[in-house]
Image (cartoon, rainbow, N blue to C red; front, side, top):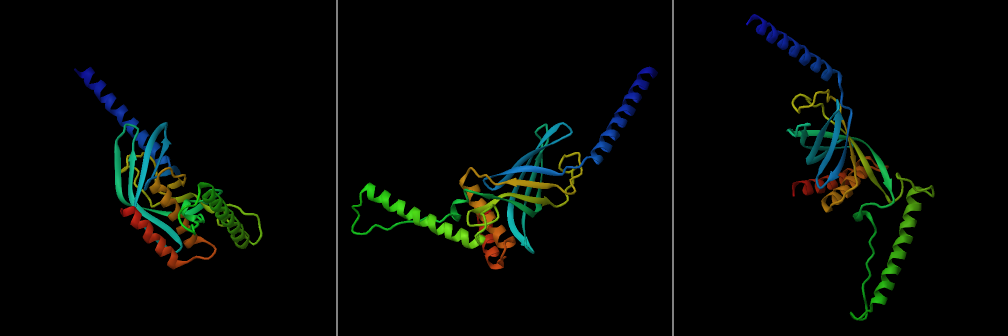
Length: 240
């Protein structure tokens, strides 16, 4: 009996030391950044910590701004390696910076030319294709003129010209409680790296709006009125 009690006491002490060591390790760990992708309205991603993978989803519910910084507030959910999810509402993220893209801007930012038929509705398919081709050519020429005007004749990059757009958004979370979210690490300043490569209609529309918001808030000529209008449109879409 005494022998068994001694063994149990030794196990409890060993377990206590292991728990203390685990807590010390957690205190020493810091989570610095999480990659995520825009899917419909949410930012979905994952991160590895101490050999385990955690899922993370941030679902913005409301957009706003502070100074010239875009801010989003919403629900943050973290799924641990066992599949258990913990969530917190009203989490704030603030945009720190962006990485630009060039080549295929969001659809609503493109100049879409339309031609009206005259002389009745009997235009042939060949005539329609010819009109569309001429319209596309004129639109391309206008786009080149805009590009030269905006960039001052300099080479067009991801930061200049009408074909530029926001490709990646770098947000910072407000300080988070790792223990409450089931993450054994310091979450005092976690960066969320949001890649904008939308595959659905809602995400594509938000891509356009986020790009416009960045232009209005942090572009060469910030426009408070335009920024407010874009943020209202973002909120309309987030609430729909």
